[in-house]
Image 1: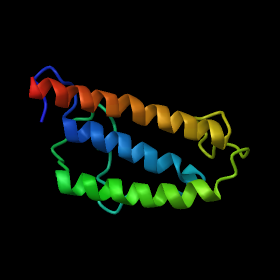
Image 2: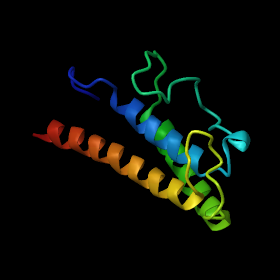
Image 3: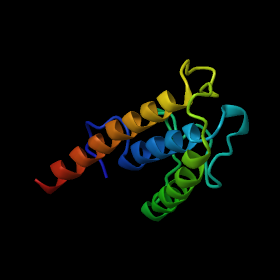
Image 4: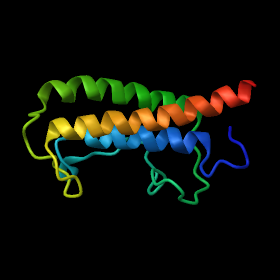
Length: 118
């Protein structure tokens, strides 16, 4: 699903958002374990790829992210450093950053869906 003016396909925006939500719930980049069906570089917006995730695969990844979030948020030390060398903030700030990133892409996807209905 997507318009010719959309830079990234719908599934790619959804995967990008889920990938980073999953990443930033880990204690650090060093212990990050990607989703079992991850394909290298697909998470990068603008990446040219023929890889395609189905709706069912993305919904499965969403389910895994929800379980992971429940487990990890309870275990996070929110005053600890981010665990990601490119994010100079503490864990609480990383989770706020993570939520804001998700909101951005959820809004984008919702807008695409509403335009499709019109």
